[in-house]
Image 1 (tube, rainbow, N blue to C red):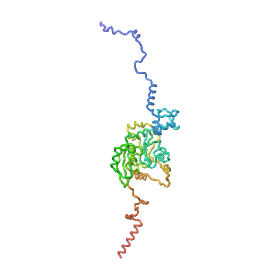
Image 2 (cartoon, one colour):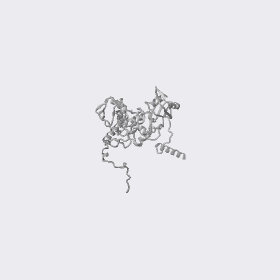
Image 3 (cartoon, rainbow, N blue to C red):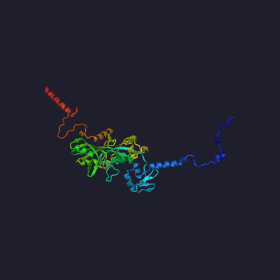
Length: 392
C-alpha cells in the first residue's frame, strides 16, 4: 500500500473561495481601448497645424506676390478669408480655409520651380511702371506661369535674372545671409587703378551707406574705357555704380554673368531656361530648401517642354521703335548675336557685300584685288600690253 504524498496545502480550492473572489470592471491592461475615430481626428488636427502658416506667406508660396506686397494688399482690403475681409496680416490660415484675392480664389500651390532669364537692356524689373516704361513682363514668353523675380536689375543692366513661382524661395535667395556670389562684367569710363580696386575687399562707405567686401579686377583696358570683373554677395541698390563712382569711374555697361551656381552661359537675350526639379534641389541643398519651405512634391500645373524666348515687340512699341522690315534670324545667327554682345574685343567693320575691303578715310587700301574682279582683269590686260611692247 502506497501512502499519499500530498500535503495539506495541495488540497483543491473550493468553489466557495472562487465565488467570493472580487471582480473588477477595469480591463487587465492599463492601455486605453483602441478608438479609430479618436486617432484619425488627432492626426488630422496635427496635419492642419503643420500646414498652417501666415496669410502673407501662403500668398507668396502661391506665386501671387511677395510677402511685403501681400501685407500691403491685406491693408488695402483686397484679401478675404472665409467670407471675411482681412484688416491685418497677423492671421494664420490652413489648407481648409477659403482664401480669395480681388474676388478670385487663391491659386493652388504648385511645385517649386526656377527659371533663368537673360534680361535685355531697356526694360524695368517690375510688374508695373507708373511712367509707362517697358517691363520684363512685356518681353517674357506668354507660356510662362505667374512668376516673381529674385532681386532686381536696373533698366540698363542686362544679364542673368532668376524667376520663380515660390515667393518663399525668392525671399531666401535675395538675403545676403544666403552667401551666394554674384558675378558681373562691367565697362567703365575713366582711369582705373588696381590698388583702389583691391581696397574694396575690406568694404567701403559711400554717402553714409556701408558696402561689404567686393572683388574687382581689371580684365582689359581700351583707351579711356576699361572692362572689369566684379563679384559681390550683398547686391544693394545700385551698389556697383555707386561704389565705382567714388573712384570717378562712370559705368557704361553692366552685365550679370552668374547668380550663385546658376550661369548665364550662352543664353541669348530674352531667352528663358528652366532648372529641372532634381538639379534645383541639389543646388539649393537641404538647408536653403527648408528655410524657403520649398515644395518639390506638389504637381506641376503648367509644364514647359523646352526653352522659350520672349517677344520684345511690346517693349519696342512702348519705346517708340519699329519692327517693320526686320528679317527673321536663324538659330545660328541668334547664337552669334548673343556671343557678340558678351565679346569685348573691337569689331572690324565690313562692307555690305560681306568682304573686308573697307578703307578708312585718308588711307590707301594695300590689299590685292580679288581674282576674277574687273580691276584684276584690267591690270592683267595692261601688263600683257607692256610685255608685247618689250618684245618688239
